Length: 365
Picture 1 (cartoon, helix red, strand yellow):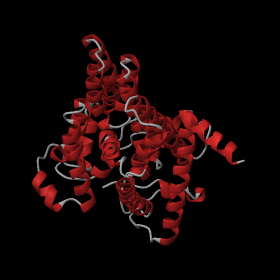
Picture 2 (cartoon, rainbow, N blue to C red; picture 1 turned 90 degrees about the horizontal axis):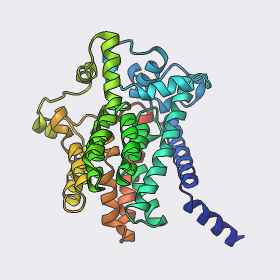
Picture 3 (cartoon, one colour; picture 1 turned 180 degrees about the horizontal axis):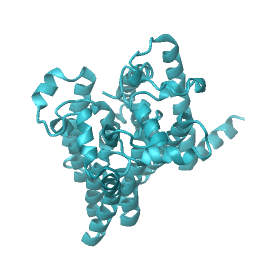
């Protein structure tokens, strides 16, 4: 019996798609369990903007707070207000498409997020195993640092983070293999998912260059990647005559290009955001002599507070800073105690964000 169990586990770990589904299901179940406990014990935020109130009978409404409410609204009713154009269209479009088969907008949104999460886990495992020379244990260790990143709850909530992770990691995988068409397609889907999807274009270009791709292949992949955000701009142009309104809409949430970094550093942030900012800078320094593409990608995230003028949403954005998590794996995987401490601290941060998100007190800031 014990030998059969070992053989089964070995077979699962050798098949990334099965392992990805298993890990995703376990992570979702754990997130829902913590969320349900928090929902029953912590008084919820009374701000109606923070809560999804349209489907109380589903018992999973606590997984759709803040931005999640907006995404579901867009899926149902479209962009009824200019401020909503800050939310890119692919995620709500996927929700709306699934609603032809699933009547509940909330369940549709969750299913889209969970499917993308499984896809992101699959690519993460392949990248760690095939290109970063991790064995099965090392790959799972790295994956845990991704899932239990302090803001990992947003991978299982009605947010577009899991979708960007799926397409971003897919673009990374194809770019490392030098498959510029696949990288271009995944990049286009990433830029249609979130505004920070444009960061993926930089990573893809640098990875293709490291893979010795030809200049025209790199340029073609970049042009394909721009289709997502360009298509959204064309849609806004046709609908409201403002192709770049998604930039203006961000002003309702953050202060783009305000260059108020010192003010933000001292007055508009939290200790968790400062710690994560320090880790982002550390990751840039770590990768610079080893893999320039990872260093430049991480630098974009490290510079985000300079662009926005504050740290609003910063911990959530860093969830997609894959080089940061991989750096922590490389630094601590050889020390059982060191890795355990890092994972424990990260998991405690994850539990904190999960419980506060469910109660409606944070949308990722």
